[in-house]
Image 1 (cartoon, one colour):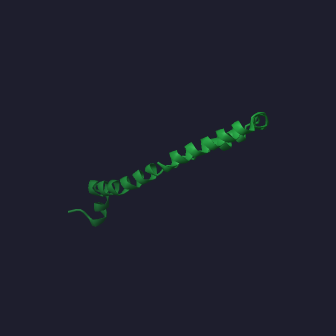
Image 2: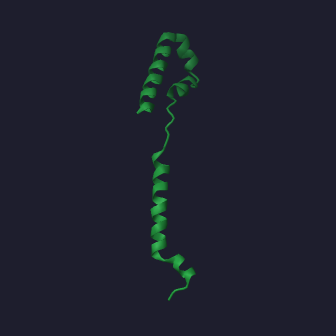
Length: 76
């Protein structure tokens, strides 16, 4: 007969640990967040000031469109 402390190292214990850790692993990988921040990335470019000066309405419309599309992606 086994001593009680040796029961802690049985394959059953390993199986129970695996069953408990598997949902945790799934939760950590399933809850990923993607930050969509392309408008800010474009505004931080060194040539953005020149683009804004040359075509301010076009830049405004493009950035608003990017923000709206990112919002729709994040809502899914």
